Image (cartoon, rainbow, N blue to C red; front, side):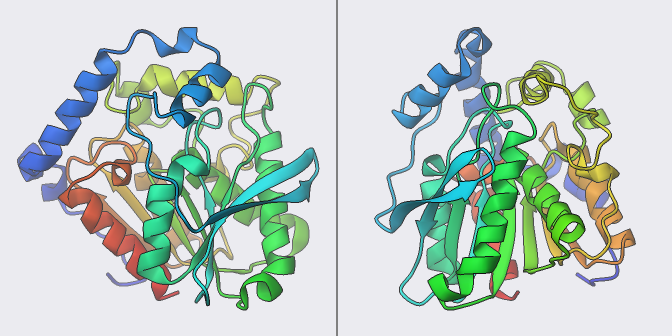
Length: 319
C-alpha cells in the first residue's frame, strides 16, 4: 500500500467475505460470553484474579519461558515491566495491553508477545500500568509515559539497540498514541520508528460503531465500553481531551503506523477515523481491514489472526 494513499475496499465489509472459520470463532465467542452471568456485578479485582488463574471466559496462554519482570520508578510508585527478549534483540517493542483500562495484564499477553519475539527478533517490554477504578485516569497513562521514558533512557544499554517500536490493542492502542503525544509535547522526544495499533479505542465519547453496536457479546459491546470509560474517568476528565481521546489531538510528527481491525468490531470506526487523521497530519499510515474479525481477533486462533499477525510482524520488522 502506498504511504500516501489509504484505500477502503467495500468488498471487505460484505458479510459474504467472512471466512467459515471466522464465523465459527465468532459464534463460539458469543455463545461463551452469552452464557456468563452479568460480569459487571463483580469487582474488577475479582475479574482480574479469575483471568490470571485461567478461570476467565477464554483460556490463559502458557507463560513464556523468556519472561522476566523488573520494576521501574513511576510518578505513582513502582511500575512493573514484563520483558521477553531474545539473546541479541534487533529492536524493542514497547507494548500496552488491552482490557478497557480496568482489566488485563502483561502476563495475559505472553502468547502473543512470545510469538512477536520469535517472528521479529525484537524484545517486548509489556507495561503493567495501573488500572481503574482503583487507579483512574491519569494513573495509567502516567505509568505508560514513565515506561517510555525509561526505554529511551535505558534501552540502548539494556538491549543493545535504539531501534524502538510501540503499540497495543484496544485500550492499549489508546495508551500507545497518548504516550507518543506526551513524549512529543512534554519532552520533545520522537524515539519510536513505528507504531502497531490494533483495534484501538481513540474516542471515549464513542464513535458511531461503538454507540450503535448494541448488546451482542462479541468480545466487546456498547455497555462494556461505557462501563470501562466510566471506571477510567471515575475522577473526571473531558472525553474530548487528546490525552484521553487521541483522535481529537494534533497528530503531526508521529511515526509510521499500521492500523489493523476487523469488520465485526464495535470499535471499527475508531480505526477508520484515526488512520486518515494520521495520514492527514503528515505521517505514514497503513490500514488493514479483516473481514469478520471480532474485537482484538488476533487473540483467538484462526486464519484471520494468522494473516493479521504476519502483517504486524512484517511491519515492525521493517521499521
